[in-house]
Image (cartoon, rainbow, N blue to C red; front, side, top):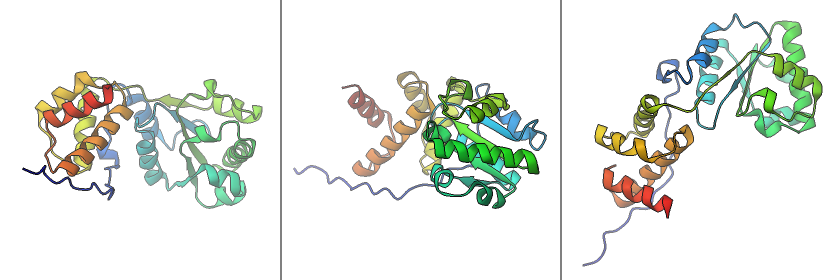
Length: 229
């Protein structure tokens, strides 16, 4: 008997739920959420949100951008566009993932100018990064002093309750329904991180599609064992 045909998994993408009501609130991120909800009463022109990869920084930044009318700019925008032009494009700006700009003098200088413009004209910046400003090796001392003095909040690794809810959400974002037994199987077997949960759901989705199977404990067991070998 010939082996069952495998379906070629096509990366057609999926839409992650990213509204305020979709963000999973837990002790590990409650401080960050409180700061987002506090706007526009922030005590400084900039707010820094930091935490590990896939922890929800971009999600919260998107929530704030929707509320504030902020424009999201990229590291390339900082390097290639005039700070005055960027600031004039919107009343507030999100600089998501500034880590890639650390030690890039041109990008750091642009953010320094954006900070000064925001302070002078009543505008607002939200900057996300993985490590807090105090642990970042900035090359521009003036930018370092401003971001290290800015209000900041961290997102911590998830506890079991949040990780369980996160897994359900990640599967649901891909239109995949899984039973509580599947979630219970995963929890003690993966790294306690947002990135690990996201990676496992991505691989499980691709594997289930390739083999034309539902998400199940045997499928996840095989994936986890292959990752360990």
